[in-house]
Image (tube, rainbow, N blue to C red; front, side):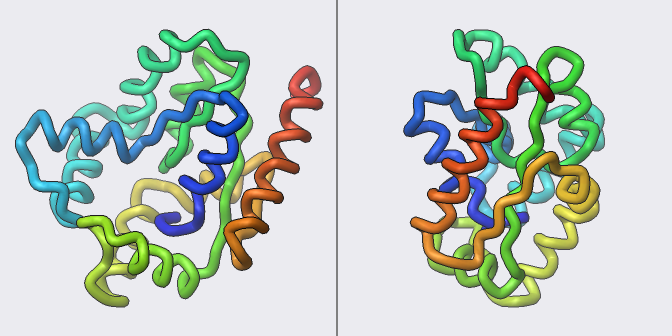
Length: 176
């Protein structure tokens, strides 16, 4: 969910030399092409429009050519929103799904502090965004995760937990 700590967890992977691809970057790149301002409303509506026009796996489809350019054993796709996105990736790759969980209160505070143009103006905006994300199927994706990392504590705690999950994934890669 937005504000759960996906970017911080991904930064741990990136610091280990693992390429990271972010679903939100795909949306922002499309917004740039369409000359849309990076507002909460525009980005949210564009995310829904792309999925409506091209299918629920559309964002993952756009990531595949980027992944194919990498010469890496592992890559991270940050911000999958639906089972269809993961299924799209599974057509070509072995996927290990990691969910980062945090309470709504913690996520709201983080989104406020982040200072991006799409931050919620208040609790109602936050709930609207959560509703939009849930509407594309993120709850099912979280429920199906191979691993879950809790993020209610400090940034250092999330980094430590992420490193631990990464070690497990890298050691057990032959068994998944």
